[in-house]
Image (cartoon, rainbow over all chains, first blue to last red; front, side):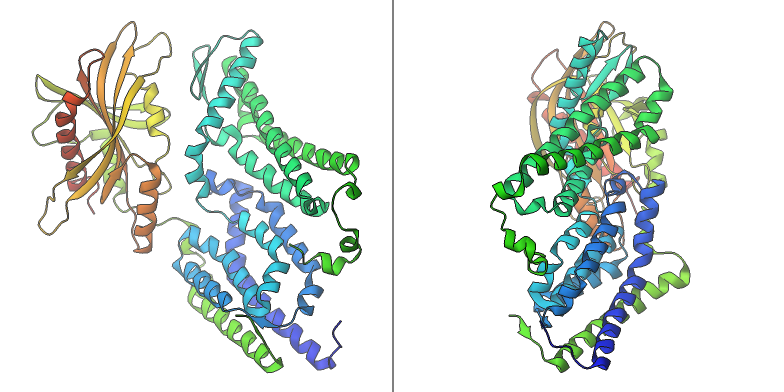
Length: 307
Length: 245
């Protein structure tokens, strides 16, 4: 516990922090506005939409950082040279004006600020919100990952084909293509639920943090594995339905589930099941059975730093 | 490494950060606010886009080769140029080109799409069978003095199909061509393009697939000299015209 310093000093300190926050807002508000615009109106591109979990992730990150503001202030002012490096790198990326690099400059500058102002403990304190921001920062990584999803696409296509054949529909599966009644449905990486997979993992991480489950490694791994399984299963069902609609000429239903609101509702339901799963984990594996240290939970201010 | 700071030093470190952010604002944000537009809103423009897209309508003229038939066709939802060419009646080939469509268009699953390629009417959906994949390099000599010869890497394999109305076997050579190189991996174009963007330009790309007819289920190696030479001719012609700045 630090001794309260003189009153003017407190105001002084708030003023500095406020100035830094204001400058950050001036620098990055247009960029983040642009991200949100792209997520809400789907007008930038498929790769940008891979990161639409940022819609909830960024406010959540801001909320966590805000809740930790007292701990932040209690940390002694230290300085880590790595912070300067990150700030300069972020600055160069920002000034490059290239979309992906300007985007990436945001988490880089934030991490640089933490290191510059509070050293490594500062970075540690903000690690989780920084992770949320970083994973929501649009970049081209999905483009590079998509080719690796071919086995997943093939698996989903074959399983959906198998289900449809069991239901008595004449389906031919060739690699990632389903042929029904002379029409083709291609299970593209995007449709294979790579995006849904990322979203469920992201929401999964948020839920782990929110429910404090992340403190137990076993439970976290179990939950994230379940999240992946749910996501893949949901996509098999979705692609089965899509193929069924397409093959039977039900184009309206196809459109709704493929790109319309049906797809969004479907995703929302899937994420809803994640909440149910984590609640179930909490209920069936109560905290004391794991090596969770109750003293940490009771001492909120200490626990928050353990990332 | 970390240094504990006294009150004065901690103030100085904050001043440094503020100055840094103000400089960033002055150089990066203020021009954006004044113009009302930001450079990061859109990817850099591909200046050759129009001439690259034209390929799909016109195909490409290759020195020493005669075009028998050229037409735009659709494969896997994308527009390609189909071109049947011959040097002499013994040396014929099919040349498929898919040019970049717009600034955001990136090479992706062109090779997978081509498995569904057909120019005849088929009753049953059928795909090309493929085997004997190998990577092959060829060098494209400089066309203008002072230019470096280009290294192109392509995939070379056997491809065949048996249908009621058509059956055939081909030696196939495929790669993405861009002004400074070529490779069948989309990611190779991607990184070359990223580096070019830091120099203020973009690298347009064209997916190229050359099909040389061979004996039914014959070996592809005897066809390699012809494939290599045609590959060099195509990349050189693309650089000289469509991909030229």
